[in-house]
Length: 355
Image 1 (tube, rainbow, N blue to C red):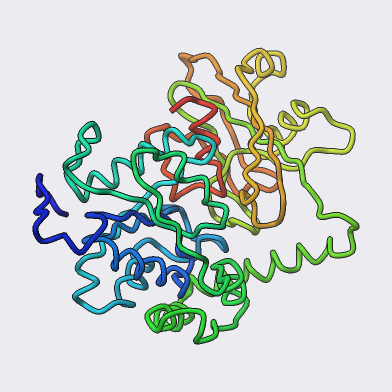
Image 2 (image 1 turned 90 degrees about the vertical axis):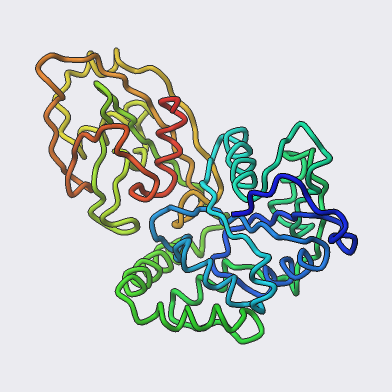
């Protein structure tokens, strides 16, 4: 961590910036990412690499931990350059750009002492590929100049990761040696074996829809049930996400309304002992969640319903896992962390409850 409050301008005449910020998930780190960091090192005294999805559980989309990605990144550079690279974890804030911007600002501030109201303390910019889905980032940070970099040979982490989880190592022209070494080591672990099993499950699942004239869009429902500072969750029994905590929910039936489907799934998975009129009278809100990458199985839009049950002196209602849930349980809200929850359920919970 660099706590210097003033920048020594005399030693930085060769650089356009004091700090360039590069945001990514690096799942895994490849030559395209490396090319951006090398461009940043050429133009900036220091480089801040914000590693997104830092503390999510392993999944086919987030296969590598934060520490593993730091190893891939820093080992790809000469020691002198690596000393100029600051890797910082970044939490996801799906469905809330304002909260995510605050997290980015706080993460940058953890590396350099910046007063955002004074522009003469440090020259900070935002660097990244000029033509990808993150191109809107500069508009969220008008106080940081944008430094666009062309996408190196059109590389993308997604096909590299998907092929790897199905058993194939990346070609040498796609990833640095540091990434290849870690992928080789990781392939020997039980964590890789579980991810590979899930990757094949998802691959088979997707192939069921190959002959569809259009890519399918699935509709699901999720129940956010809260009482006395606790939230009702289930443990997933099947893939994908087997063993992770999740909101009770599932696919909507052909002849159901959204709320009816939600209550049906809630009862099937938790056996919640609350009368139907009381449950429906506790409905405090509903919202759709449609991040295109929220589900590995394909385009899935979920409709969440927020039930705020009244405090009961007799305690929390009894629940028991059923159907697709291995177990059902009440958890204090303070004990729910993103590394425990399936897909985007942590973000859904935060948005619905207002945490």
